[in-house]
Length: 106
Image (cartoon, rainbow, N blue to C red):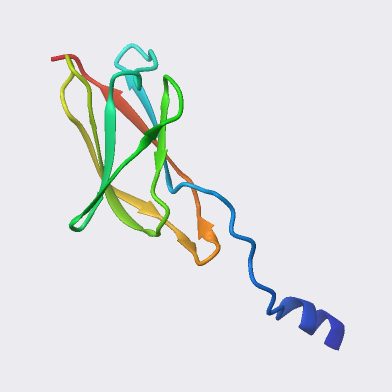
């Protein structure tokens, strides 16, 4: 019985894994990947983080828990803005929140 209690109350530090709290999939209205040429930013309070483009579809970023507003801009398209993105986590890292973004032509 005490062995299972010890295992459940481990004091070993967690392993910090590289993670990102927001993974934004950017597409046109027709569903075509549209991250190429776009810029994505995550805003929390007065802080702004530029997300990194991973490929023609996805931007990633944010390494702290909190509630974010995501903006995506691309020439020829209206600004896309998504509010209330909740990123959860702890000292070991953050959970990835997938955010679909649809860009509408101007």
